[in-house]
Image (tube, rainbow, N blue to C red; front, side, top):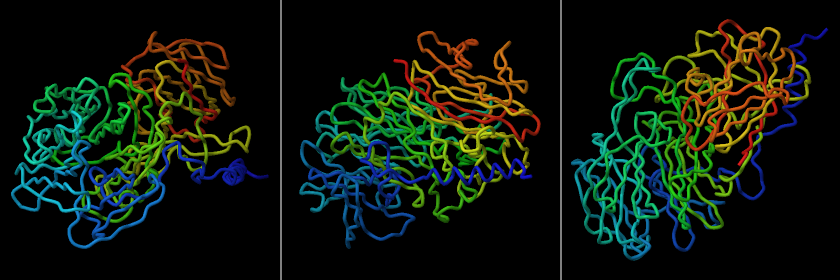
Length: 567
């Protein structure tokens, strides 16, 4: 007689053949990779008035020679143009036609230079030193007041805060604004140690409809920090926490021609800090595997909060070593720059390490979707499920492995499910298996799913949140707006139990207005939950986690997950 495990293996092989990870060939709508980027995302992507797109390779770790990538068909296909001598690039002032870039100089005194071309991007360029501040991560020029003023955000190597250079004469002369700073991260609460503290860095600026400038900054806190300028960037208000969750990752604004604003950022929370010595440098990045996107018409109400891209190598054991050693090039999907194309399309470059960098193309209408159904395939392309092995390897990274995994349904071997176990392993940071799944943010919405508890099930948590958590992060249960725990007896609320060895249909309906969520099992209302934490933009994640305290090989299974708005 064949064992139960044998039937599971046969079932896995059968449905693995039915599902694939191939990219659709239909017209591009959802975010689709179209190329690998030639440089770290933040300053090399240029769109010319002719419609030609160029992406310049920056001098650095790649050592690929002098070239730029070129697309003549709105980013769908690319070729490579090599050149000799010096070729500079920058963004074009829409009023004057001048190409302008502020960048690090080659002098050893912290020189910052402005590069200008008044006769086309391939014409003659001038270069003039404007500062010795050791500015780094200098962003592309932003043209405000219809091109009358130029704004260039930056921070310094010494982490003295975020500021902007500004020019009122088409980039000939420049001044610097005051710098704004964010407070340092401190030990306490869920954190037994201190994060790498670098202050307010990598600022991005956008001009709002009333002329106010809005700056968002990367910090070591749990949120991006923000500052505002009412005088065109000359002076900036004291930096305060913004509503956007993010830790040690770069934000990027993109203002569209119709006035709408896109924000690219990592809407993520890292694992709590462990008890480690404070060195003032990076330790481990555990929140850089999911890149997000939202859109607004007025800077106040935002739509989307969708995963633009999940790191395809997020489950890899050799993750810290993929692509070889290349200085401080992080193997993440954070750091972005973007340009608007025609027909609602946007092109975005992301990442730092050559092995991980990507150029994506998407339609902004994708951000306005009202529902999403989870795909459970062997690729787990929609899911965050990885666990971490102990010990930092390579640049600020852990080795990983997939935790929750695809397996046939306990009752129907031809139906794939996501299976969660707890099998203690001293090599892992945390052996509790979990998963996070994203859907369009909803202030009034519902999510439904089927859950199967095995005979010896030892406990689970289902949490609804407004940002990404690591799959194994147990702090989500205490921090989520709507956490639902299921004990080893299947007890869901004080008096209600789920049936074991049976598929239970669960639905959660939440309301911003009422600040509560109603819980239904098999279409019958069984109780309500009061909102326990603030929500920004709406609920956009469901997080599953084994909370077993003793070994739980059978655990629980989920399938048929669907979220939809009720507005």
